[in-house]
Length: 302
Ligand SMILES: [Zn+2]
Image (cartoon, rainbow, N blue to C red; front, side, top):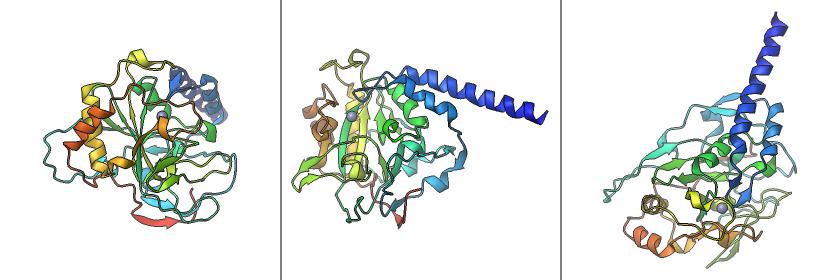
């Protein structure tokens, strides 16, 4: 009887994962790259545990990456949703604009701690940058992808925040954590070229000091065309409100296309930088969204 129960549980778990895999197969495009639906099949053998959010979401950096290539991040799912204040504080503002905000925490396999040293042990202290993206596929399919477990390094991807076509802001990764938004990337600004190597098998990237924001792509922008009809007024307003809350100076706001070194990313396509700059100037800059770790760094990432 006990054995029968065990078999049933395995079959049920397998079926649930299969359903998730079907859902993910709709996410054909994500951030300009085609997502291979077959990649989801690996989840059939992945055991998902449930962990309390306090363990995996503390605001601590890690000192140094573990130099172990090809390591699977078999992290358990997090139970419950963190409060909105885990993603942004709320200082009094002289703006009357208030977007709708949602929390949809990414699976912890898709993000990590920020590091205080690079792979070779050199201290890193880059000022934060903002990297703007678009989802290319629908916003909802991108969120579904981030919320699924992706134990293989190659499949792990996330933004900190996504802005839906209706302007709703969706918080996915806490700002003091490292979202996997732009592998193989360099930011070229006033301080020269900036990138940090944190993984022995991947090139250096800006992820250790980046805050990644993505705009949901309109339906006519699916696939790999060079342009589309653009983003909604509500998206630009929410983006300006959000970026102002980071306090990041304008000369450290960039796009995935500009930091990318693979020459494969062109997002966000059809972005109206002038309109965005106008809206941004109307919002007071605050430090409501901070990339700083507020707890002492732990020796190694879990
Ligand atoms: Zn991108």
